[in-house]
Image (cartoon, rainbow, N blue to C red; front, top):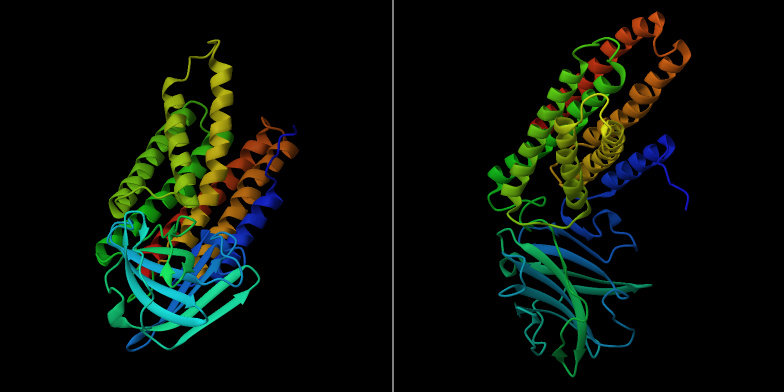
Length: 394
């Protein structure tokens, strides 16, 4: 089986995809999967707008996922819960029974929705549509009928038989974040503290992987000729500083979340942090020059470092698009341009310089000094700019 490698063109394509998805995203919404952005690929797509006394709520679900077929009565449920558990959750049901459309409310228990008959509708402003495998319910609901506190959101669906709500056939989709219908985005009810923790997480991780990691790799790969005796100490100290900032980021988001979530950003994040700890351990325990295990350690160090490099840049873009911090698109554009520059300006640029002049030539060393000043200055400007933008407009 051939080994698949990510080319620079593929990296730029990924960056452009995330920029596109960010521009298509909204504040008052919840999509699953996270980046489906209200397209036919979504399993669920919840969006809402706020009026003076009501919410305009739109829910789209995949009939294939929820195992609903044509010509049968059904319900689509929007549940809210403080604990991400269905027990004691409040559920707003959009139901179709014998062509009668209704919006009612019920309560969940540990295993689903309490069986109940469909009563009088809470609103007459209801619209049901079906396009392909996507079933939509849009309705107006008075604000008093939805909690103004932040809750985890459940989106589920099932059948109605003889006027009775049936148990859902597929596990409902649960939001990874607390959602407040009265706010403009996904934030907890302790909003100021919560926002600060998210901003601390984002700032620490951008500093760790957007700045320190790049400088650490740059030092190891290109500055050995300039700092012949001290390059490894600089490399190691920067790596430990990166680990410290990484742990600050992990601690802040752990306090904020209070629970483990399994979104793409979180899973990649745990992999990156785990690889970072392993990488620092390899630095600390690397065998002395001439030891039999030295070459194997160097190969492992290189492979792990490359994996961290690729995954961390992908995850930074995922994080900037996942957590809706009211960021201007310019923040993501800066990150996308910086990612392209690191690939072409720092890595490929230095490799070309090294190739044309020879890795040990005096001309290469002279040009490398100038090129390094430019590269490191851009990295520093990037780090300061993005962190300041996060904390000023976030």
